[in-house]
Length: 329
Image (cartoon, rainbow, N blue to C red; front, side, top):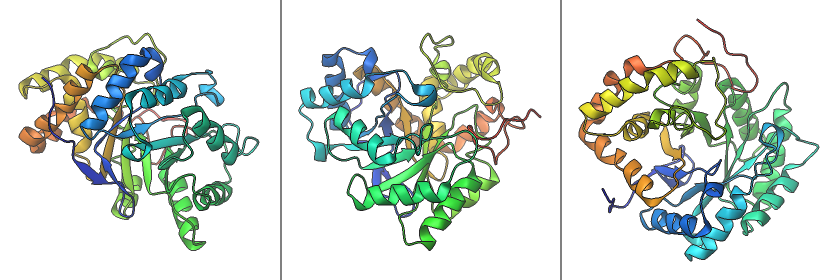
């Protein structure tokens, strides 16, 4: 069914900007489409109000893939005739080679590949081992002062590390991280719904839900051929086995499993945006049907999917994907 309404917006944290509740990711997305297809999708998305694009230069650490997804995105935006002021760009600052590769070097290279001179927000990526959080906050603040972007967040950090970053930034008069981009889905809830992050959300932190389909598995692509995200807790086979139940619950509500996965994330009180990847306008329209599901059955969704929470008692609520080995219950 073709979607025709404008997508609503929510504030990204207590002090962040207003953003659409849906955003389009870039990992293994734009580079799987022809330029014309990508341009048509971008034009369609922006016209519907889905004008937040999470775009990264994937060539660092475990993402050293020499991917061209950002180049394809930049060309497609220009081909679609979308002006820079008509879309929001969220970039990435990788910590794998930091500080050897500075944030200033990263953002300049990343934006030049897209073909713009600024982002609206950035996400500081996950990391392994120890990290000088004070330096990260200070270096990000320098980029904010230089006008590269205005808002920033973190990707799958532990709640303790993020709290330290926010408190240090505020104490030093610098811009604190306003949101967390967290792996969040029907199956993976322990961190976003745990008490440590709950306190941060109560303090005004915003949530960006990512990997909501588990690389496509929770949308029915049970054996993705492309590279997909990490598997904290080693539960992917259990998630795959849970898909038929997700499909049954969705059908009970007159929806698809993908719509259920998206609508569920939007029931989180701190959720501002759900990020997902699509490969065409029809898939975008289908996913936006989650709004109708949320409007019709929002209060019923959480009880209905309680049994699909797979990482309960497997991943600790205070964990980060990068720095803590998940523990099995």
